Image (tube, rainbow, N blue to C red; front, side, top):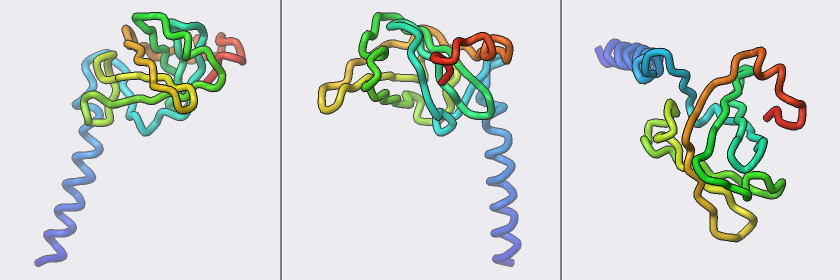
Length: 129
């Protein structure tokens, strides 16, 4: 009996994790899990490209100038505002850039969009995350 309950619980958990990303995505919107974020490159102080694995690249448009993003020694700190781990909109991200031990500078994400494979291929090599 206990074994049957454990198997049923495991099956339910597996079904929930399979269904959750689909349900959490608004229609026509690309989302990614924050744990899929593998790297980033700043095109300028208003544009960041991020690699979320499996050849997916997203463009983050910043509302304010963030010169710290263009410095090679900057570290990016992303805070998941929704606490779900799923990033679908600018409201889901709280970005900060840090230079060593200095206080992190906040940058507001104004837009998130997934690049098409042809857009990714057109990115200059130095901007590919």
